[in-house]
Length: 464
Image (cartoon, rainbow, N blue to C red; front, side):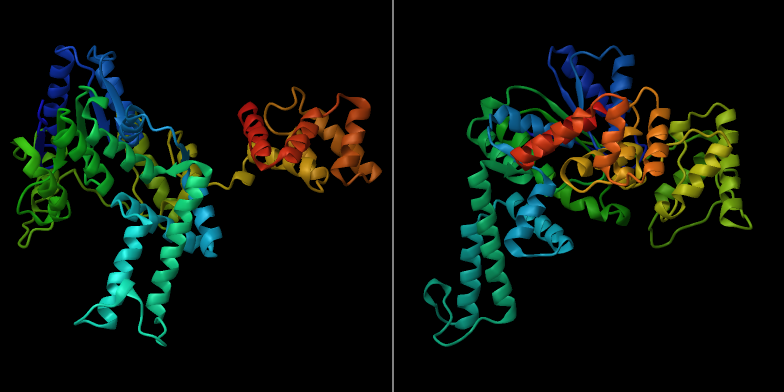
């Protein structure tokens, strides 16, 4: 069978693209197929799983994020290489290059981009040699890209030479470890499917909700639809000629030549809430236009002013509480701030005062959590000079003791007797209670090597 081209669905926001994609998914299920719906976020994944289940399609259709699709590609290609995680990649590159953590992260992104474009170390070095030769003699050739005798490479040239060495060393390290990073695994899997399209089978793939697509994502779509022959439906928020969609024109133009079906949906206003419909539809149609007009927002836009940051957040929380009381689902309400991390603590406190359930994305240091403090305390007791505080942090971690007051008694007794080290405090504990064997097991694991210690700590973390 020849390859089946891609079906494109385009249109502005709220034009009904989801309706078209879900209709196509239902058609696949009706024909006895097991389609794969791919969405951008975990929230989208949960929403459409729920929607499909309510529509009787819990069986026969899967909802995944793009990483799930790529994992399926790797699995069907039959790759056996163990994956190398992003943190491990940075550590390897940092060791090879001597770069600081921030630079190692940037180097990892560069390596990922090179691998996505299937640039091997040999190809990169060849390009560098060609560039060197052109600089050395624009009208001639220099064998193997060598500089004329006695001439030293400039700063940029030396940096590129060093980069080639690091890239080469990184791939040699991967070969020794018999591992591959994310980009290598995916590109190798896609190449395997290009060579043997039958590995994929006949699973249709439908993509909905993506604002734009990365190079690796576009590669996967082109491989599955243009080479393998899977039926692919791609939904994009895009309208030709509109400035607001200029950033997505590249993805559209990349996919358009492969599409034998292109459904262009017109703008619609009926998906907006009635009292905000006129203002929001007008905003969507006039965003970033050269000559925008103005309409009265009505109840769609309101200004709230507070005398302090807390007073302002209290006004916002009051509005949210009123919406909840009207029956609006909490998951349908969003609070937007330019720097959420700067107000996370205060916002959480205010929302709790107003009895508002919320989900707030915030970065918390592992050591600042009860479980984190406990695990790190156990680690210090096992392999370092832990003190009384480390032992107590572990004992007080949720789930370690059925009677938390025992840790309080240990602390009081240890402080009276001047037992400031973890070893002396442990001896006091074990003289009255049971042996703390988990500390010994962690120490034994550390003696077997870093991998064994990591496994032991992972098991302890899961237990906690």
